[in-house]
Length: 510
Ligand SMILES: Nc1ncnc2c1ncn2[C@@H]1O[C@H](COP(=O)(O)OP(=O)(O)OP(=O)(O)O)[C@@H](O)[C@H]1O
Ligand SMILES: [Mg+2]
Image (cartoon, rainbow, N blue to C red; front, top):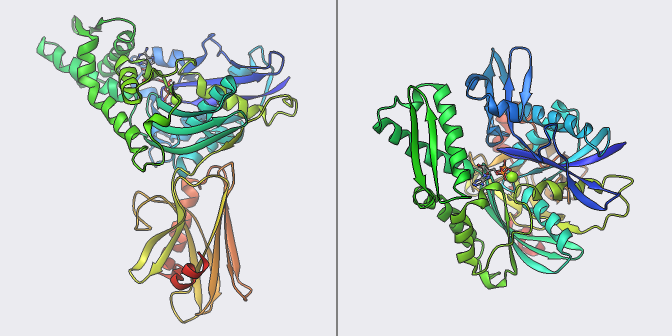
C-alpha cells in the first residue's frame, strides 16, 4: 500500500507520523528500532552510512565521522569534510530522510511512501527552506508535497484534537531553535497571527552551558581538559545532555565522566537552573515582544501549548506559567506533535484520505519580500512589497520605473529580509529577472503573489508597452545556493540599474 507521511526534521531528533484511515487518527510511525523519534545524527564510515540511534551511540568512537546538529547550517555555504568528500547540510538531511522513508516502508502502515510534508522552523529563510526541499527530492528520492512551519503543524495537530475556538500561544523550544507563535484556532481554521523566535536558541545551548561548567569542574579536580581531544569532547557533551534530561525527572544528578580517571560531577536541579536561567529569560523576552504592538494582550491567550523536548525542563515551564498566569497545556507529547500536524497535512495529498476533516490554515510571512530599488538615496535600497507578518495567500502590486531617461535593461531583484540596504548580509536574494529595453518614462507594475504553500510569483508589466517579465520562486521561497550564486555572478554589473519606486504614483494608488 502506498501512503504519505509527515516528517519533523529536527536539530536533535526527527520524527514521522501518518494519518491512519482505519482508526481515523494520527499515529507516530516507529523507526526500525521501535522508537517514535530518530536522532538526527549521521555517521559516514568507510563502507557504510549509519543514521540515528547507532550513529549517536558511536559518536565518541568516530567524532570525525559523525555529523550532528547540521540543521543549524541548512541553507548556508557550510560543508563538512569526511575522507576528502564534502557533505553539505542538505546531503546530511537527505541521509536522515532516506532512513526515515526506509523505516516507514517497513512499518505496519504500508510498503511504499508516496511523499511527505516536511516541517521547518518558522524562522527558516528561503535558502534553508530550499535546502530542506532538496534534501528530500534530490537526496532521499522522496517527493515533498510541501514544507510546513513547525508551530503551524503543532497547532494543526492540537486543533484537530481539541475542535474548539481558542487563541493559542505556541512556545516551541527544541534542540536548536525557539519559536514563539500566536494563533487563532477555530473548528475549521488555523490563523497564525504573529511569530517571533531565534534559530540559534535551543536545548543545545543549555548543553553548552552545562558543558563549560563540567569542564571547569573536571579541570579543577585534576582531569585533563576535555577539549583536548574530539573523543573526550564528544563523551562529555553526551554526558551533560543526559544529565540535563535527568534533572527534569529528579532534583539531583551527576555527570559521570570517564577519561584518564573516573569523575562524577554532582549537580542539583536548582544549580542547573542558575546556570541556564539567562537562556530561559531570552525566550520570555522574545515572547514578550509579540505583545508589544498592543494588538493582543497576554490576557487574550486561552491556552499555551508547549512544543519541543526542551519544554520538559522545569524552569522553562515555570517561566511560561508565570508569564501567562496559567498552566501550559500538556495534552500533547512535546516532541511528537509537530510530526503529527505534518501527517494531517500530508493526508490531504492522499487520494484515499477523503474523509479527513480539514482545517484551513492561514499562515503568515516570516520575512518581508520586496525588490531592490534605486531611489533618491541612491542604489541598493530594499523596498518591501509584502511585509513580514502578512497573511498567506497575498497579492500586492507597486509601481516602479526606469531611474534614468535613457532606454535600458532593468533588473527586478527579489529580496527577502528586513534590512533597509538591499544587499545587506541579513537579507537574502531570492532571484532576479531582467526587463529589456525599458524607455525612460515607463511605469512598471510589479506584482508579488505568495500562495498558501509559500511559493512566490513575481511579475512586472509596463503600462501601455509590450514589456513584461517574471519569475516563479517555488518550493518555499528560495533558490538553491548554486543558482543564486550563478545569477549573482551573471548580473553583478547591472545592479545599479534596478527599478525605481514611483513615489507619486504609489501615493495615488494606495
Ligand atoms: N527530559 C528532558 N529534559 C530536558 N531536555 C530534554 C528532555 N528530553 C529532551 N530534551 C531536549 O530536547 C531537545 C530535543 O527536542 P526536540 O526533539 O523537540 O528538538 P528538535 O525537533 O530536534 O529540534 P528543533 O525543533 O529545534 O529543530 C534536546 O536538546 C534534548 O536534550
Ligand atoms: Mg522540533
